[in-house]
Amino acid sequence: MNIRNRAYFFIILILLFVFYPGSGHLFAHAGDFHFHLASEEIAEIIRETAEESYPGNIMEKISGAAAIEELDRAGMEKGFILSYAYILGTPEIDLSREYCDVKKENNFLALEVARYPDRLFGFFSVNPLKPYSLLEISRCVKLLNLPGLKLHFKSSNIDLRNEYHLNQVKKVFQHAADLEIPVILHFRNRSPDFGREDAEIFINEIIAQIPGLKIQISHLGGWGGFDRPTEEVFRTFINAFEENPGLDKSRIFMDISGVIIGENQTTPGGPGPTSLLERWKVAEMLREWGLDQVVFGSNWPWVSPEKYVEIIREKLPLTQWEINSLLENSPVESLFGEEVPTPNLNILNLFLQEGVDYKAPYSINY
Image 1: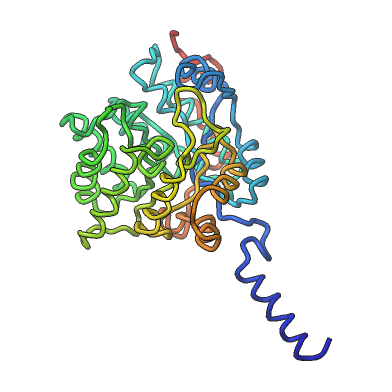
Image 2: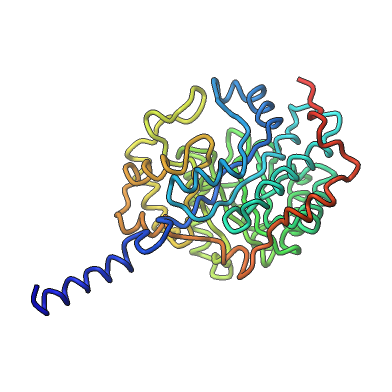
């Protein structure tokens, strides 16, 4: 090999090292920024109560170790892992010791992520309409040292067109902003006419009025798949941020968890496979919103991060460069800053008593 050819060879190696995703690194992709953790008790509740929505679901306990295995299998470094405690505040579930059970589930999250502080970021959860919501947010941040909050408007039966609901939710978002923690939000609610109006209320009454709020909106504002309500919400966000330069997009992320659905991924009663037209709409709207403000999420355990990466690469009509860019996006610095709070396992084991019998089963009455 002559000198010129050697030079070309080393230039190519350098370019591959710099630009090929995963080259020179242990991890090929930044992370899965939307997946779940579940204790044995909450997994059983989901199996018992979600049979109509997810017939034959195989929900089981999801530990921090299992989450790490999924990240490793997908070549991902970090994960935003979300508590299912909000399910315990669902109106249809009857609990005799509800707040104790909510605390236990959020404590389970803290204990699990404390074992992997460099890779798992724990988002505790709560129903924002409950009288204990602000107290639980403060407890999880100040006592457990958990860095983020997960809200689920559908499970909590939130309707922003209801003035009482809006006021209560604003208090929760303001509290999160005051504590400087980000919120991952499942925005879509149960209303059949959910869409543009709900997005406008959220943007005008919450985002515009709470400076410093950091938020990641799940499923592009929907609940999986890409239907009329999801398109309306995402379009409303795109237009609002284009037309109002006073709105700061730097701390507002969209995640694509559950949006692109493969042929063999659907369940009876859930959204069907994403059509080619819907996938083209998603791709164009992602470009309009800005791919740098979009992050990958799998919604595991409903689909593994490894499998969802395959679905995105196969089904989403973006260029490979755009898909690689999306998979390499990380919202960590924008949402948390330079240092992310993490639970300390030794400290947690010292004080997680609070008068609660953590060996007792959850107080649900089926």
